[in-house]
Length: 243
Ligand code: NAP
Image (cartoon, rainbow, N blue to C red; front, side):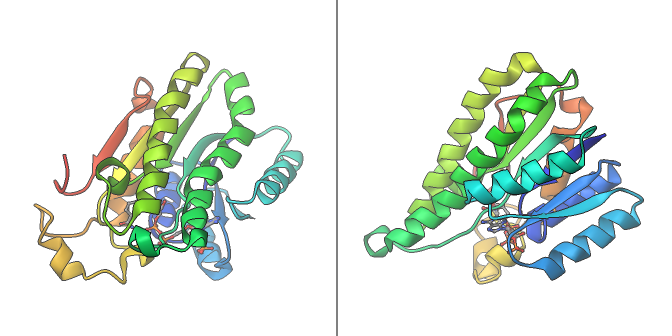
């Protein structure tokens, strides 16, 4: 059986992607770091669609934790493999750079960039060996394309993720593995709840923040068979904020 792994699947965009996968009939591994209640809720909602769902807790920024959890899952599922990977886990630690503590620089890169590296490297060999290949979608950001003041760490992490997406797509194209990135603008999740939404929405040509389900629809398409010839792309989803 082909499974999907969604990192940071317990809340926000990851949660919406898990629910989209459920609607597509794809069994989901819901990764989370600490919020077990939220993760359990997503699991129940996926199962309510008649689709298999499992929780897989690990910190994507820890190679040891990621390796252990994924190896354990593989040992328990000798006939299954993870064919769909959504590298979604990410954090913000905003500050102007001259005041940015080193920890905030490192933590943001550790989760978004190193997390992508640890999880993807672990799963790639199996994806490449299978006839059906695999699909990888990386959750980048408008910040990684445009650069956002107050987010030098986050912009750097997401820009690096975009570079990695394009490079990896070319490495694995012959193995039937596609690698794409999605670059959302402002989306209504816990990550943006401290932002002045009304003020920021005025900057968006559509005058509103996006909904997690709107991003999940795009991710679902990139994971689907219909997207089989799309690879190395970065697709913006931002209400016209930046083109
Ligand atoms: P969110 O609501 O804050 O949710 C973050 C999710 O990531 C949670 O499920 C959290 O797990 C998980 N997570 C955080 N650190 C982790 C770690 N070290 N290991 C494993 N899981 C971890 O964020 P969001 O808005 O959905 O953002 C999801 C992704 O989209 C991020 O990469 C973000 O940078 C990107 N993005 C968001 C926006 C936006 O406007 N919201 C825009 C552009 C890009 P717990 O529940 O266990 O804490």
